[in-house]
Length: 428
Image 1 (cartoon, rainbow, N blue to C red):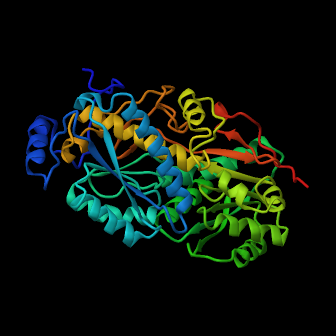
Image 2 (cartoon, helix red, strand yellow; image 1 turned 30 degrees about the horizontal axis):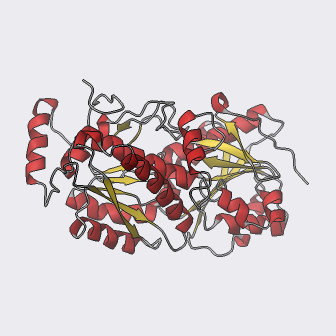
C-alpha cells in the first residue's frame, strides 16, 4: 500500500521495538497513548515543530553551520511547496539550538527543545561526542532524533543516522588502501593508523585494523590521539620513525589543519596518506590552509574518505547544489548536503506518520523510501536510495576523493562510481 510521497513500503522494525508482528499494531497504539506530553496532530494551520541541534559555535562550527544551511534550504522548499501533505499542508517550524560544540550543552539544549519547545522530532547533532550526550536525553523521553554526521546508533529505539556506520567507514579505509596497492605501482605492506580517542575514532580504527589484517597487511601500530590535540608534529614524528607504507588517519575538521601543517613542516611525503572524514575532504579545509600547504599535503599522495563528492552523477544532488549556489553563505560540502538530506528524511517520515505524535513518527522511519536517483536523493554513498533499518541507511558506504593541485575534488573509489583514476606520484 502506498503510504508516503516516495511510495515507501514498511519493512521490519528494529527487533527491540516490538515483541512480534502479531501485536505490532496494538503496541503502537499503546505507545502513542502513553507517551509523555505528546504533541497533538497538527492541522494545516498548525506548524509541526522540528528541533535542530547545530554546533553554530565552537570547534565543530563548520559542521553545524553547514548542516543548518542545508536544513533551512530544504525546509523552505517544503513549506513553499505545500508543506506536509498528509498533515493537511502543515508547515515545518524549525527551532534551532546552538550546541556550542559541547556535549553538555547539546544535552541541555535537547532537554529545552523537548520540555519547553515541545518539538516532535530533532535533527542533529553532527558529531559523536555531542550525539552520545543527546541520546541519554532523547531515549529517556522517547523523542525521535536524526543524527547527521555521527556514525553510531545508540539506544534501543529513538536514534537514527543519515551518515555511514563507523565500522563501515573503518572497513572502507583498509579496502581503499588495498585498492591503491593493487591498481598502482605502490608496494604497501605496513600500515599505521591514528584515531581521535573517542567512540567514533575507536570504532573506525578497530574496523580498519581488522580489515587490513584480514587483507594481509601488517598493522604496525594503532595510535590514539587526544581529540583536543594542538600540535600533530610529535604524532607524525612517531609515525615517521615507524616507517609505514601507508598511514590511515581519522581526523575531525579542527585537527585536520594541524595534521596538514605538521606534515608540511616536516616535509613528510613518503607513505600514502588516507584520511577523513571532516579533516581532509571539505572545501573549508582546503580554503583554510595556506595555498602552499594545501597543494603540498592534500594534493600530494593523500586521499580523503568522504560521504560526498559534489561532482557525483546524482540528479538530486546536482539540483540541490544548483539551487543553493549563490543562496547560502557556507561551502556546499558534506556538512551542507547531509543537513539537507536529514531534512528530506524528516519530510518523508512526517508524510508517512501523518502525525506529530513522537511515537508514531518514530515508528515511521522504516517506512521511508527515497528512491535512488530521485530529486530528494543527495548522498551518492546511499547507493540504493534512502531506506532505514536498525537506525541507519541500508547499504550506505564511504567513498574516496583526491584533491587536484588547484583545489578540486576528484572521486576515485568505489570504481563503479569513480570519475578519475588515483594519482600516487609525488607532486612538487
